[in-house]
Image (cartoon, rainbow, N blue to C red; front, side):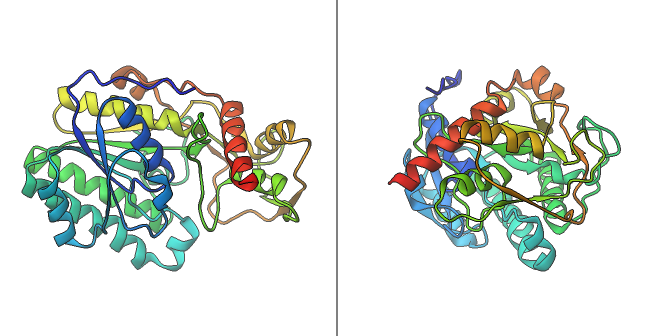
Length: 336
């Protein structure tokens, strides 16, 4: 059973942009358990109506300035959490305009709506993609930011907009740079459901559980790592959400803009993840090896010491926990 963090500040209404998506829906649950009221603002282009269970849903798009103004007029918003972004690297390369329009212009519209409504607290869902190819690992927040695809650039540009609004307009903001989000609600109420699914763990699980599924594809086995597959830092979705609650408390005490990495500080190779999944799933699935994807770094591992020292955050879940929770959720969807 999840152990929610309790809010030390009075209960408030939190606007969760993208609250019908994977991480946003988990966030709404933790907000509700902590005594807050989450209001989901989502256009449902990639999110799901069924995932909105812990507060009202307002169907809207960050590109619709009138709809944004309406939601701030209707609800007494104290804090905004911004998860509403396109997030497929490959798609961003093919359709860069879609990513800059949605992720950058959408963020600008949100910032303007917040300023008009005098809402001064923002927690932004950012990404390790702002760093680009690592010069060293683990990556800390001082690592140069040199994205290598439009998705990473769109997130970095959004971060820059947020920093400028913090400087000019007194916004208090935390940009939380996720590494690899993984897992599902430990109580089985929500989980990861993308179409198409591009993330490793759900694709392994689906290949193991779904009848007639194709083998899972491993992209590259010739990296300079112990087993030849690339290494990533996998952090449980519930731990990511716990960091947002702590960031909300942090912003109540600290002015300005801040950036924090969210990761475990240790990496697992794709081969290790596959083996861990097979251990829980009866030795399945089969896997095929394909060539490397362009731009995939050998290692992406976070230094989350700043989040530990300043937010008081530490991951509670292991990779095995994440696989167990994700497997249980996907199995329930197939059986249903």
